[in-house]
Image 1 (tube, rainbow, N blue to C red):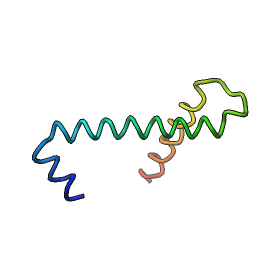
Image 2 (image 1 turned 180 degrees about the horizontal axis):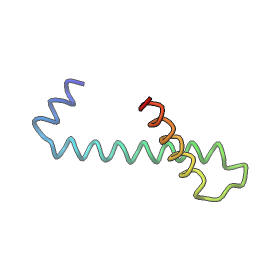
Image 3 (image 1 turned 135 degrees about the horizontal axis):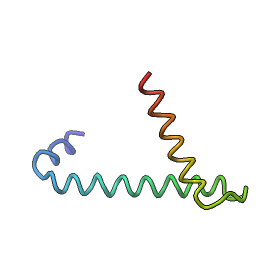
Length: 65
């Protein structure tokens, strides 16, 4: 964690780029895992995105309580 704070302070552009790439990779991985789970049920292609966003909304709502 200290390395990330140092990187954020010394090279904010590189830190932002790494953060963006990390979010994109995590989102793609989550979508892939959800597609593996719900794929055999024959749901439409947009269903994994709805499931992921719905899950994130539920997590955010529980953290606000």
